[in-house]
Structure formats: C-alpha cells, structure tokens
Amino acid sequence: MKGKFKIGVRAYSQWGIHVKYVLHGLEKSNANAEDRVVVLHSWEAVSNKEIYPQVSPLSWGCPAVSNDFMKLLDTKLKAAKKPVLLWIID
Image: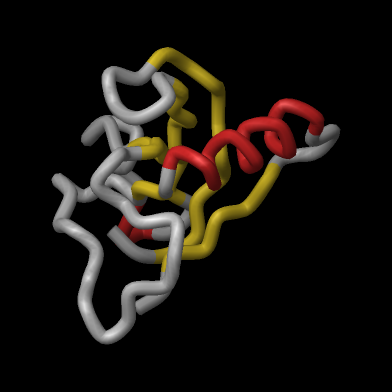
C-alpha cells in the first residue's frame, strides 16, 4: 500500500520487537488502511543493512523495518509532540 499515512497509536505486535503503529491512510487509494489492519512493525526477516539489488521479503501489505531500526523509530515516535507523516513510495 502506497501513499501518505498518519502514524497512529502504538500497540503490541506479534512480529519483531512486539511494537506496531496503526496507520491511517490519508488518500483515497489508502483510506481503508486501518480497516485492513495495515500497520508499521518490525520483522526479523528485514535486514538492517542495504541489500540492493536483492529485495526484502514480501509482507502482507504492511511496511516492515528491521528490529534495530524499529527500536530507534519507536523512541522517536513516542517522543513526538505532533502527528508524524509516513510517505510510502515506489
């Protein structure tokens, strides 16, 4: 799922470091993200290093990051005073 999303509430995840963030689609093409349970989470299968020209493992539509990056991102998102925009592009 591509486009602009507002990063929502933090919750427990069965994946990665067990943290996820609900995503709220801000465009017509992704407005159903919350209904489809599209969340930002970490996953052990995502590398913490650049793997180009290979690709990351396919997910079920959720953006996934490495566990190490999610630890950093989680700290930043918990401290954010304003809503955070996530823009997913091709």
